[in-house]
Image (cartoon, rainbow, N blue to C red; front, side, top):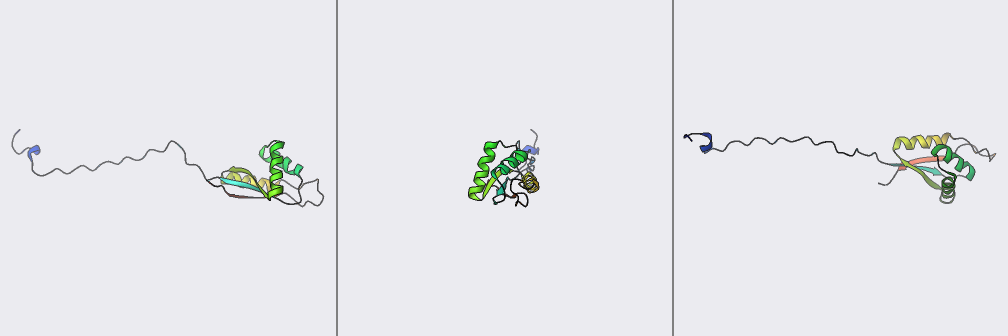
Length: 120
């Protein structure tokens, strides 16, 4: 090699900056936080009404509807669905709009429900 070539140079060459790669999108999409739809107890609705409403709005069979009616009657509340916030809001609104229990003449309207963040 001839003298004065770059390989014989006493001064170090500047290191090329490392290229950073953009991270690839993860294979799993980010999940939205879950919300519970909570049915609240009252004394104006029959078990039959609750079972009928849960079947109409959620597609639950009579056995599941009865179990949830029993839970709301004995504990004051029952989680009827865990889903995304937007879907939970829709289901809560459908419960509120379902109508009165025609089996009880003093019934003034639909049952009450709320939504709340579900534990992760």
